[in-house]
Amino acid sequence: PAYADAVLGLARLRFVDGAVDNAAGLVQQALSLDDSAAEPFLLQAHIHVKNGKVQAASQALERALACDFHIRDTPQYHLVEAAICVLTDDYAGALESLDAAMKLPGVRVGSEASAKTPVALQDRIAIYVEAALVRAKSGAVHEATKMMQDAVHAFGGTLLGNVVAIAGASL
Image 1: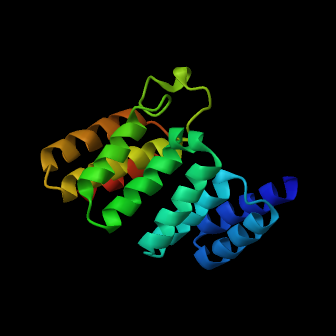
Image 2 (image 1 turned 180 degrees about the vertical axis):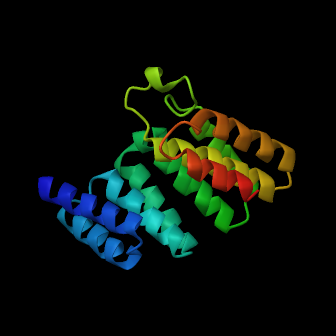
């Protein structure tokens, strides 16, 4: 299992670095070592979303859930689920998933202390930005603008504050 974790960590790095095909191969390697963990399937779902493979992404997300039902309590699960919904133009489903993510402990500003496990800053920002973008796509531009203003206010003084400001400008 430790080797599988290391391979999965490398897969995450490759994915963030943009080497999606390399990341996909590493995820397959991690799954061949241990297919009982949810995290490789979650990353696999994210990779499939990035490649526009809706059916494969849904199946990988279901496998992640089958391995560990508590994966639903993570921001990453909701981000991937929302992305799948966006690919199928199901904006209501995407908003439902993102709103559920916003309710997770540690996501909203001021709720960090109540989280059992800290939520990564980039995940918190991604939830805010994605929720705003989906609201804009679904025609709720005023709500989207308000959400981006909240995000700029909440994350403006952080390392990724500029990312939020740029995303807000794209609305």
